[in-house]
Length: 206
Image (cartoon, rainbow, N blue to C red):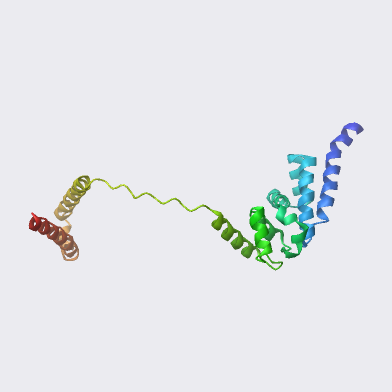
């Protein structure tokens, strides 16, 4: 019974040990933020997915997504380069946005002093978008929209006009039309006048 109990509690002891190692680095310096990401990455390999998530949530009070973001930092060589540390913002959120850039782009941004220690997350996001947009291949020119043959379009419009005329005839025949004629009559005459003008144009060109 005691052996079984010891085996059952062993994973918790190991997880707690990893949590202690991570917790030491959860302070606002670039070096410690990156160290926390490295410890989390190693803890995941040692504990496995299920035990790792339990350690993150139960021992560290951290969302699994946040842990993934910390681990993403140490997978970008430009961030873990010791020569770049003094140029980086001591915010894991800002660092995560920067980690989304390819190594070459991030290195170029750091060397151009576009990345600064006082950079806020919003600025980091804008920088990343600018670099990614610049790297994106130009959009292929859109082919011109295919137009239906003109006779087909005229035939379709004629059928639609016929439906409208039929609907208007029904509205005029409605027993309520007379009491509203002063209001709706002007609208109808306006649209019908346009139709008549179009007819006159067609007859003039014949």
